[in-house]
Image (cartoon, rainbow, N blue to C red; front, side, top):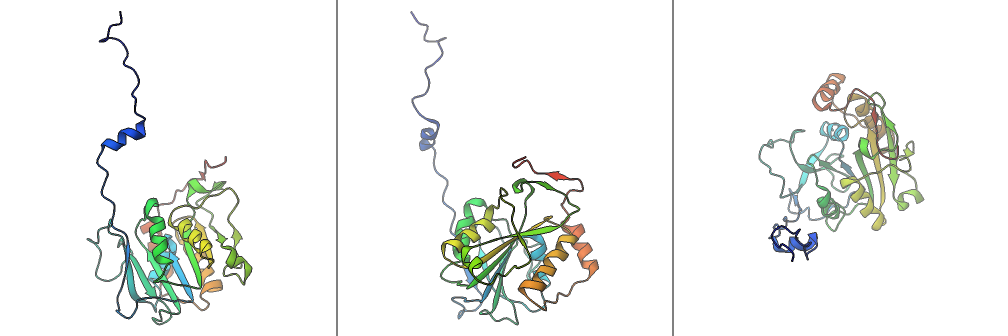
Length: 264
C-alpha cells in the first residue's frame, strides 16, 4: 500500500500559464497622447519630420538656434516631476518643435528624452505617425546598441549606417552618403517601430543609427551628416568646449573594445 504522506505528489493538472488566471491582472496603462501648445494646431503636415532618439542628436537639436516648442507627447507612466520650466537635456520629456523659424508645416522635430518601453513603442509610433501628424518624409536618428550589432565595435571608432523604407529607395534618397546597416545586425525599440510603421503606410523614411552611443566624435559625425544631406547651412551655437562638456556628461562609453555576442 502506498504511503500518501511520503509519496511524491502527482504533477499539477494546470499548466504554468493557467495558474496566472488566478492572479488579479495589473490595471492597463493609460494610452500616450499628444498635447499641442496652440488650439489651432490640431494637425501637423510637415515636409520633414525628424525624430531624435540618440544622445548626440538630442544634444545637437537642443542647441538649434531657431526652434519653437509647439507641443509634447505625454507618456502617463513617466512622471513630470523634476523637469525644468525651460526645456533641458536632463528632462524626461518628449517635446515637439517647429524648426525654420517656427513654421509647423516645414520641418518638425520630436525630441525623445525619455525611455520608451518596448511594449509602448508601437503606441508611440502610431501617435507620431498618425492622424494628427502627417509627414511626407521622415528621418529617425538612433544609436547602435552593442548587443545588436554583428561584429566588433570599438569606442575609438565612429560610424553611421542607414535603413530605408521601400518608398524612400524609389526616389531621391535623403541620406546619400551612408552605407546600409550590415546584414545580421538588429535594430529594436522605438526606432524599429517607427520605421516599420512608415513601411506599412508607404512613407518615405530613413533610419540613421550611429556608434558610439555617446561622445564628442559621434557628435561631430552626426552634425556633419545633418549639414550635408538634411539641413544644408545648419548652424549650431555651441563650441568645442561644449562638445567636451557633452563627452564628460554623457560619456558612458567603454574605453576597451566591445565585441558583440550576436552571430560571433
